[in-house]
Amino acid sequence: MFRKISLALLAGASCVCAGFHQAAAIELAPPAEPAVIYANQPAQQPAAPVRTAYAERSNMGGGFIEFLFGDGPNQGERYQQQPAYQQQPSYGSQRPLLPQQNASEPSHPAFDPKFEKQLVDYHGNERVGTIVVDTPNKFLFLVQGNGKALRYGIGVGRPGFAWSGVKQISAKKEWPDWTPPAEMLARRPDLPRHMEGGPQNPLGARAMYLGSSLYRIHGSNEPWTIGTNVSSGCIRMRNEDVIDLYGRVNVGARVVVI
Image 1 (tube, helix red, strand yellow):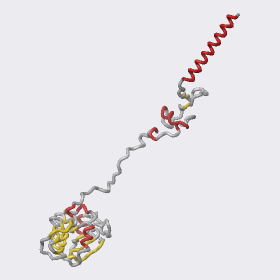
Image 2 (tube, helix red, strand yellow; image 1 turned 135 degrees about the vertical axis):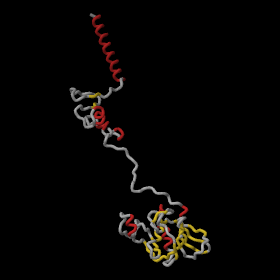
Image 3 (cartoon, one colour; image 1 turned 90 degrees about the horizontal axis):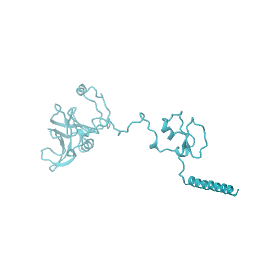
Image 4 (cartoon, helix red, strand yellow; image 1 turned 180 degrees about the vertical axis):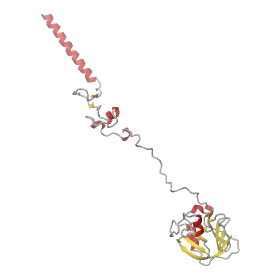
């Protein structure tokens, strides 16, 4: 009888020790990974957090993407706010961003500094206040006296439209209107029949009319054409230069075109 009791006590002690060892092992073991429960499996009450992938819902692409970004139970705290770089890209609805280009603003050659207004030596015979137009070299001189002249860059007539002679300034106008002559309209029927003065007007900010002819010394809204053969016989200047010249000469001033 004593032997049976001893064996029973020893067996109980072994179970207790095994229980302690098992509890210690459970306590030291790392936490279990969250389990995944699919909708077609029987509901359980797991101790660990649960992320549910819905097999029948496919509003985010289904599969792993829906599992990560879906709105199933127990996902709110961990997956509610996803960084933008983790979102599923929408292929086909996105296009690469390209630099903005404005096709209405073509590039033009830079203005050549040699055509800037400057005071230069003058050795001609014209009296003070005379305008001398050097057509081949694309310069206009306003004689100052004492062997000096103000020199401006100009645009002149295209081949077949260049001319030479002596004129007088017969009129001066600020922001002049423009009415293309019949000869020009025959060549360019797309031109307007009349254009009010203003920044878009091809006669620019000022015009000085030469005698009874259709020729003028005038400004231009195309400064990159200065230094070229570009006009139908008029002498064109940059707007800032024609404003400066306009204030220095009077009606009746002599103009020599060579």
